[in-house]
Amino acid sequence: MYNSFFGFSENPFNLTPDPRYLFLSAYHKEAIEHLLYGINERKGFIVITGGIGTGKTTLCRTLLNHLGADTKSALIFNSFISDMELLKSINQEFGIDMPPEAATKKDYIDALNRFLLDIFAEGGNAVLIIDEAQNLSHDVLEQIRMLSNLETAKEKLIQIVLAGQPELQAVLAAPSLRQLNERVMVRYDLRPLAFKDIRGYMEHRMVVAGGHGNVRFSKGAVRDIYSYSRGNPRRINNVCDRALLISYALGRHDVSRGIIKKSIRELYGNNNPITGWGGSRKQRASYAFLLFILIIAAGYGGWRYKERLLAVGPVEDIKPISKTVDTQGADIKMKVKTAPIFLNESESLSALFSMFYEEADTDNYKPEGAYLNLVSYNMTPEYYVTLKRPFRVSLTNPDSASKYMVIKSTSEKDAIAIDSDGKERAIERDFIMAHWGNHVSWVYPPSRETVALNKGVSAPDVIELQKTLNSIGYMVKTTGVYDQLTYQEIMRFQKEFGLKIDGIAGARTRALLYQMVR
Image (cartoon, rainbow, N blue to C red; front, top):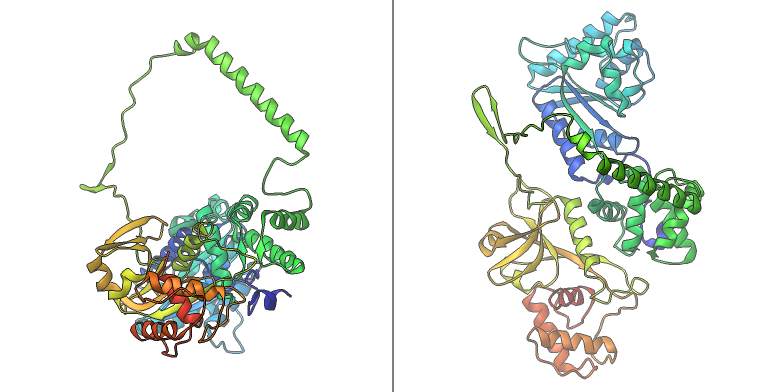
């Protein structure tokens, strides 16, 4: 309904598990790494757990895109099935043709075993992914354990991923499933998004949906979304979808705290199931006062009887825990990991938009009169010092496809980059030159009324254009009239930076000028 109004080609906050929309937070990235490690190293059983709506299904679909062509996969979503139905589904997903007379479990297992041996002989691998695994019966789980016996003398023929809600761990801990639980070699519990990832998650989904940054959620709105959702992606999608619908009805391109609060009320009424204690404001105040009284009483009691409490027994010295663990005679020392400085698509977009909004107030950004574009240029590295606003640049290393450096600020000798934790890191000029991939992009907020400026035009925008040209060394008179000298200097600027040389200050020319002045 609101897609065309906001410039989306599709709904950015749809609940379907589309891998394109997976936002690789630190937790989701670790989950992918655990999955790939377990599969590539043929660990047999891998268990991924996480709360409802944390993105497990999307993660499973994304995993399939990360597997090589030599890895065959089967994905099972219906977990309310019998052991026989499971075997039929697995063989069907792997594309194993079964003879019409096949009727027993042995028939299906034998066919699966022949298939897996053929894959292994060709140097390939096979992975079975079962979603919502907490719903599997004990009989089915025992059948899955038996499938893990399909192996050679040294290698597991099939890697089995069980993805489910946290109660899956309790199911596996049952005494009757002890043999299965002990075979799980890789485990990961997927956590909700951290607060610092919320805006990046939202921006990522809107960019994938075809948006150009022309929707702005205020800082207060983002805080309320986090308070409501606690970082759960499904809840974020629900409230953002409703908020965009309300903004569309109001004819607005910004989302305020008031709109978020209204969205939550429409979704859950006055009973927000995520935050607060429930009840009226007066009731919550009474709870808080009662808690305060209890704390005071406990503190008074502890002080009055402190001597009696301290006399219970001697206080022993507490020895500090060693930071070195001795494993089979080898010292493994704890190291502080440094976050990577090469970011993927979603991380780099998140960093760019976050820095833009942090600086928006000082840049006089008006959400009701402007929208955002992500503009891209090809630029050689010696020009990096001319870029005054945050930008990202692709990497030269062909092994680092879709990887970027995000630069916050530059100087003649170095620059400040943003790592995957959102922290600033100083990098030297030589490092920039060595990794610069020429493709540069940044966030640009053109006015909706912006028109291309050409000779003869007289407007306030021309004055700003002339001031900008003067500030970067192109000498023109600040008259407010697009005269011959302004026309010539714009052509010189376009020629030096590889733009179309037409003397017209169009969108791309003005976006580059915007980047060069603070």
